Image (cartoon, rainbow, N blue to C red):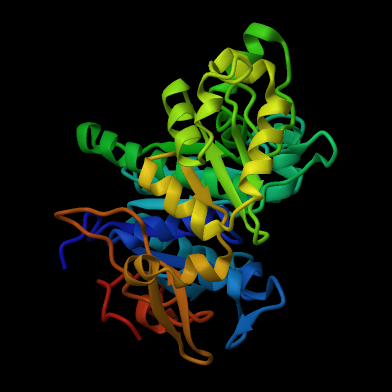
Length: 390
């Protein structure tokens, strides 16, 4: 199997969502990811009310393509085994509270002495320095502190979190990029380095390009729901059958296409609507007119008309519609098997490589499943990956 990261050894001390998602991405490209858990296991195994074979659905969603072992880092034997594994690893990823790995003798400065080529990625909530470094952090807390919630929702709703764990995921993706950049640098220098990333910094960074807008104006962007501060229309509208459709016209060309598609060509020359500036000045009137028009026919009609015209639109689909879409079924869903719970589906890696495609070869590991395979009596073995799906 030709994979981009084949032979790369990842020592994964992460838990919950952010770190495991990053290491899963590396595992999808062929890295040998060794998930190290404390005796009680990753808390994500017990998170949420939906489980399969004793493991939480959330855990199953972000831990494929990994082998799993249990080490008690509070014991001498556990720390010795961890050191032996780190000496052979290419990458170590951890998301403990700052300072914990140092206390266990597994900090970056400790490990670089025994493995100068090691890439050591630390993911924290608020960073390794500063007054908040020891605060516990979860996705929704970081969304609040970073300002993401301040611009999400409407004036009526007040600040809202996103409908998915935004801060967890954006931090994981940036961590993955950081690890790959450090590996590329190692190819030139022969030396490893530390990659340090906080969820707070990643979430603030994600608000680009509004950072420049705020710097130039001093204004916090309004909470506008599905609307856009600089584009009208950019909103959802209800159809006759109670569905919703997202409509965007990024310039006058697409406004004219929309008007023709909805059978309202007269709006192309209506002085209040004809230009971008006019639509911005008459936002409520534009929304009222489009709401009236879209409420006159059902979603199927509007999808056919808008598609034929080349308009920019999207039906607001339900989850059953998304996950039963034939393209999604064929290209994005993969069935895995839990040894105690049966089959379940995960979303495949969306990256498409012509030469080194991603693969899902392992279901998420049971707690301590690969201890015998990975560890010898003195805890020094890290054999090649053996086998495919269980």
